[in-house]
Structure formats: structure tokens, C-alpha cells
Image (tube, rainbow, N blue to C red; front, side, top):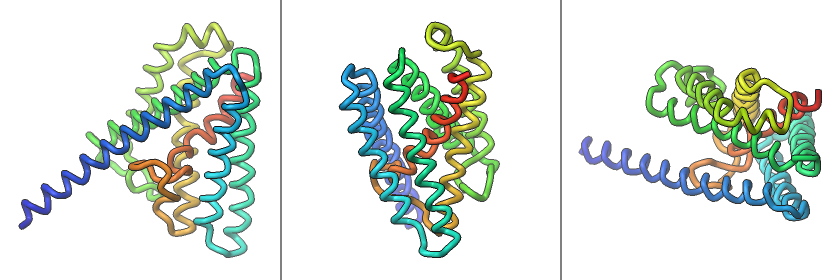
Length: 223
């Protein structure tokens, strides 16, 4: 009986990983395609969709206490500002290239942390997010540094920032952004915000790293 249960758990885990990979690929492909699309309109519609979905979820998971309502207001402003900056960057010179760099950094941090954390993760990083480990954090940093090294020529052609420091800063922003949303969900006693993508949870679970990394990246390139 125990062997059957263990095999069942393993099968469910494999299915979850498969669903996560497929859904993540579709989401990433769509995001990249619309970023490269010359017409700003279609990109804006996609961002509006993500904005509405994210705000809907944060309102939905928020418990109706005075403290939580204050947090809700600041979180909505935080989300709106992040997406506003994405639209602003897309409309700038070399906007598509800049956003692609941001997405590559953010996703490499997420994927590196998830893969290394899943395989080697043992030491818990924080109580805010039980699945986060120190090994996963190292995986995020290494993945971002490799990404920076591979894309440094593109970076040098579009923005005047150091690829190594940018890698560390964006990686840190991704991790902190993830923990911010984990803290908000923990305050409201929620594990997931929704079911936007199979294996990923809701909008907030998929976009938590991007919110803060967008703000930090914009500050870096605006110097």
C-alpha cells in the first residue's frame, strides 16, 4: 500500500512538472511574441489583461480587515506601477530589446531557482515561503549570471550597465518580489492566488518576480 501511495505521489509530481513546463512555455512564447510585435496596441492589451487578472486575485484573496485593506491598496498601486513601466519601456527606443532582457533575467532567476531548489534543495530559506531553499537561491544567482554573460553583447548595444552587477541586482529583485507576494498571501492565509496557469497558480504566482524586477530594472536603465 505504501509503495502504491509513493508511486502515486511521484506520478502526480511528474504531471505537475509537465503541466508547469507546458503552461510556462505557452505564457513565455506569447509574452515574447507580443513584446516583439511592432504594434504597441496588442502588447498593451496583453498587459491590461495581466493587470486586471492580478488585481482581481489580490482583491479576492484579501481578508476584510483594516490592516489588510491598507496592504491591498499599496499592493494594487505596486502592480499598476510595474505594468505602467512595462508599457512605457515598450514605447521607448529599443523598447522590445530592453523588455526581452528583463524577461530573460526574470525567467532565468525563476527557472534556476525552481530547478536547483527541486533537485538539491534542503536548507529552508525563510518561513514566508516554505518551498524556497538556499540551494534554490544559489541556483537563481548562478542562472542570472550565466544569462548576463550570454546576453552582455545585447546589453552593451542597448543600455549602459554592467552585466554582472545587473544580474545580481535583478536576481535579488526577483527573489524579494516573490517573497513580498508570499508574505501577502501568508497574511491572508492563502497558499495560491488562483489558477491562471496549471502548475503555476494564479497571476500573482506567475508575475510576483516580474513586479519588482521591472521597477528595479527601470531605475537601473534610467540613470
